[in-house]
Image: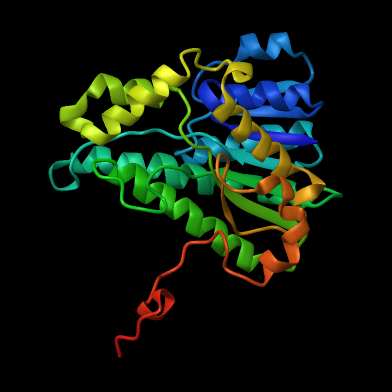
Length: 283
């Protein structure tokens, strides 16, 4: 498959690039950092563009370069993201707060929009996998900008799935779970006074459980996230679209057996809960 991967230079994105290449795919990485060394290690199979996905002109230019080399894209993985502004929402820096939302939400949408025409040319069922995560399904105190953006990613995924339901296209979001990356280091560096005691303790637990960041063989959580991405890119997930799947907790390896049930339900989606859903009548 010809796959485009954003955020491919570090952390989960770099681990994904390695994993997808090992599976025989061709990968085009988009990141703000230079990746020429990685291209040299995988000649002809890994291509890269320096690109800030939060800036549409740069994304548009990157996909023009991809279109000049590849006749189509079979899949897109939007892994780029930043933790950005952290702290209480009512005292946060408004500009940094907005920049955080733009980097995570606009960065996801711009990549999808840039890839749309090339995805439409694939002879197989096209696949889009978007990274959501912490704060998308419940309030995450002191991480409002990140959580709001990641919630927006899920609703974007659901909306595109509905709009394109008659096309051979599957788009899903994933929650990778707690993985030791630079985001973990950022939380620890900021300290409990800024991120809150619970977030700081969770980061300490993640760091101690997975001391070798990026070592996929030693990191079960990372392996599950990589496995879920690979599954969502495969024919096994055909017809499953518009869902938020949690890599560590959901039974995604067997969801192909429940595809028809999923299509007829709102399982693994964001929905409003009313009293009747809890067996209560308040009217």
